[in-house]
Amino acid sequence: MQMPHIQISTTDAKLGVQTERPPMEIQQHDAEIYTINNHVDTVTISHTPMELNVDQTEAFHAANLVAPLRSAQEFYAQADVTASEYTSKTVRQGDQMMDIANGQSAIPHIARENWAPPQKEANIGYMPASLDQTVIDFQSGDLHVDIESAMPDFNVERGGADVHIPNWQLNPYIEQKASIQFDVVGGQVDHTL
Image (cartoon, rainbow, N blue to C red; front, side, top):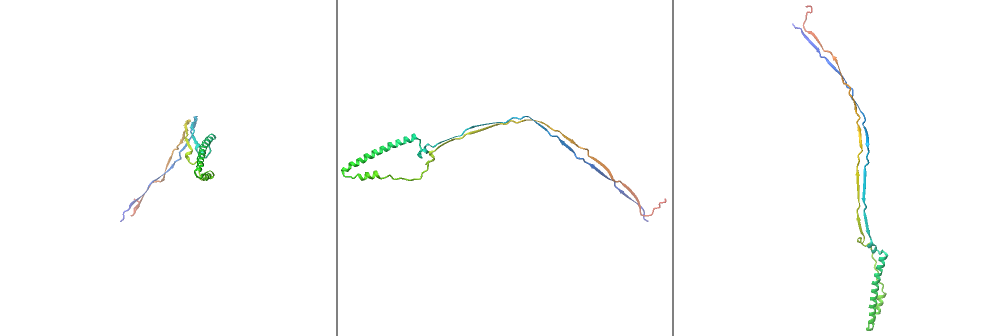
């Protein structure tokens, strides 16, 4: 004989939660900036001029470009030398002419000396012939810059911030109720008793 037994079935309860999360709001007000004093920067500039001296006296002299007084002095000095040379040449040729009495023929020699043109020389030259004939003196200048910086004075009034944080909400609810059920399984049960 089979004994009846009881079968129990249960269902768990289920809870649900509905949430509301509204956003936070922040409003920032602008800051106010006021200039109280706007000072002016001061810039001071001073300089010492540079100096360049070029002396080309000797270079001009080498190119035969001389001042009139110096040219006259050199001409008279050369004329004095030329006169002395001519006098000594004339005396020498006179001595040679006196030797004719001794049987020497000085006239052809004197004629050749007086009538033969001097040989000309042609060369390529540069003016000035050397850089040493030009004297260059350079003294550098100085430049001084002095800046006095003046900062402006500011007054700043901060703008506050408005912050609004709404409350979050949780709404719980029951999705499924709990239940229990009993059943008799197997065998025959007299329900009339």
